[in-house]
Length: 184
Image (tube, rainbow, N blue to C red; front, side, top):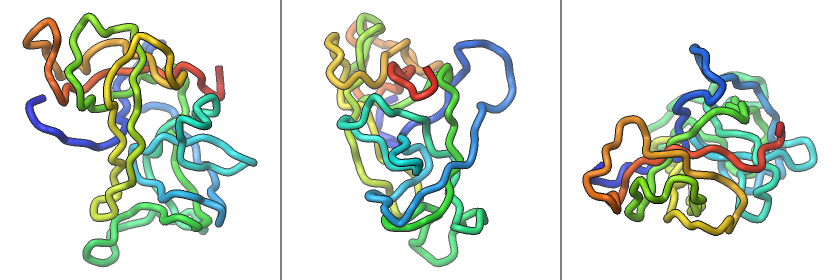
């Protein structure tokens, strides 16, 4: 990919095979929601409620947000200009989370990524949700051989990418799998 298009995590394909939509379930948030949640944000469970995932709670990775709902389980929508369907901080609501531990995810990598980096670990940059679109701004800052965060192992370039050089190119989409998932 020649230019940056940060959109958080996107479902790619199941590692167990089969077709159809990835598995997802509704999970609650509480008024203790520390960070806003948007589509593509990685999340974890803390005290029975969903919170945005960080490297500090990497072992509790649950999945990625597919949609946000209010406290009555009604979908959040664009209601005003510049008010996107994301769940603001300190808001009780619900999020539809794709929580399949065998689901490969695609994320943009800001650094050059080539075929030689397959099997490494993506170092994820935590970034705020885009409040104009409701879409996550998470991205991979790079790939390392060391398991720095214990979060995501690179399984390849995204199906839509081609490695133009052995070292790859910046802003390539990479396919990753969660390493320490709640359901594994």
